[in-house]
Length: 150
Length: 85
Image (cartoon, rainbow over the protein chains, first blue to last red):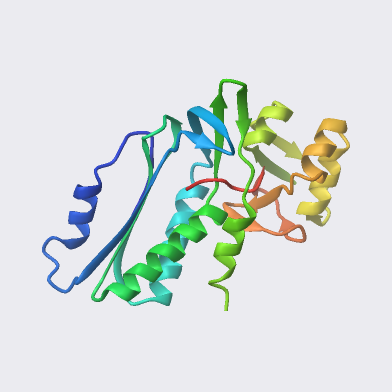
């Protein structure tokens, strides 16, 4: 498992290869890359600043990977989340999962993103021409996570 | 008992506190009781901790609910609903 919270950018190709190279038992790698958008609720974003809770954030991401591992037959997973000040077009998050077959990896990847969005302690603050504001948690993210509870 | 509290995001900014050490009487302390205690500091503290922000609590890096019990030496944290990803 690879879990990293960092200010610097990441190389998606490199991270995917880490899950795949020298692993002939891996038949599928599914990845999700989140990018900073230039528009949120009609506001033009200049920058997006992310705060986290050092120690708890990493622990929470590891717990999410372990939950996915206990639920699906996946081989390995990588979560990288950036913090600090980002700009539109910057990569913000990577979730990548390897498994023998694609279905398990697709589901586990979605599961991990849904939990990351609702459980991992990160907070976004956007800066626009009008000033700065903390983002509100979205009900739709909570609904997305709840569909895994059964 | 002695505990350490961390505040994050909007709480940290509004309360102008990122962390503090507190010494409290040795009685059963839940997250809710601690919030109520801190809320007495001012209207701003009350609004941040007991208002519509839906503050979440953590003890020793685990998300907990309002009825969770805090023990001597614990690291407590309060923060708004998370918005990463």
